[in-house]
Image (cartoon, rainbow, N blue to C red; front, side, top):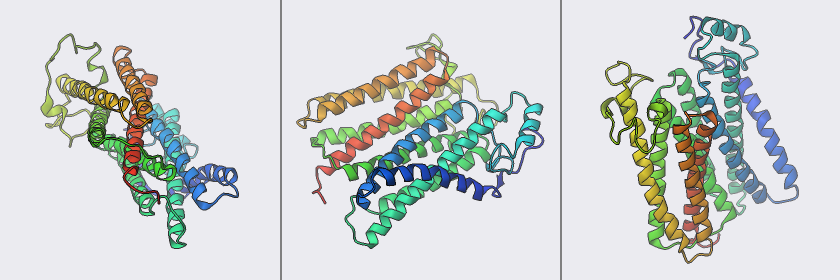
Length: 374
């Protein structure tokens, strides 16, 4: 890092950062209030939950863009940028850091990308806070509610933890385990909000017990595969294999699993503190490919079962999952054979988020079939 690197934490700009988040959140809040004027609190809460889910999906994509454009350390402190609430106030420090390291992690463009990500994350956090407050107000007034107030409360706690991991991502200098957990936290937030939207919409899906169990297995495998994908991206192991289906012209190239899957280590080093070897990066990449093959088999089985489901919506769910899986396979191959272009990498992350959201919605609707309409 440049010699003028700021302290890791400087909470002076926190109030201004929170103000920006509130101002951003006012836009969707005002739209929901105007669009559903005259409607009950339940209708407004439903609309706000759906809109927050959409904005969280966008935030996950922008977070991926921040990471993939190497902007994660565009502001090397937290929550501000060189102790300022925006890169404008940090202009002199950024210019000095950029002059010292022109190709380093701190540039004006990267600083703006990083801070915009923080602004958007704060705005989503404000919306989730509003959902929690509205749920508890309705609960105290004994108004009919589609969602228990504990759901948005748990979501609020989750988004706070996600913010903490975002801070650690910066202050721990892109520590691979923290970055991967931050990605999983964003996707977990999507799953929580997706389940809450279905509680409001309530469209039960009749699935046989065996199909439900298979859906849960596929969901678990998808989470595991997303974790492996995050580990590949975080360790920059995408381009160690530029051919397919072989890797480096071999079906089983030299690999070092011991160092590649050491969790408690800094970026670019192994268990012994030495530079992470090419064989370790190869192991990370190949395991992700194996996971993709396993998930593809399980997902194909689920799609087949849904296509033959007795529920009329089953074939539609089979089609939706089939499109999502095809998208993931295509973008994953595109990352390898095209040299990891930014667009393909973003599309792959978006596909993973969409796939998890679809599975969360489907499983929630299947569970609704067992409970009476409140």
